[in-house]
Image 1 (tube, rainbow, N blue to C red):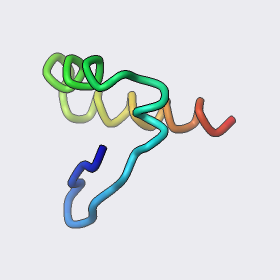
Image 2: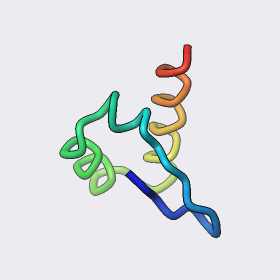
Image 3: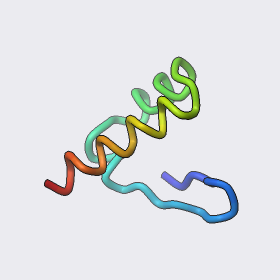
Length: 49
């Protein structure tokens, strides 16, 4: 998944491993941008620990 974040493009392969794309779409629709960003950060830390 490639997501444009401000000026830079951030790739998040860890997110695809932890959350199926259908869940990602659902979360993006249901959560505010800051909440979804917090979720992706938590998933990142969980995947790297």
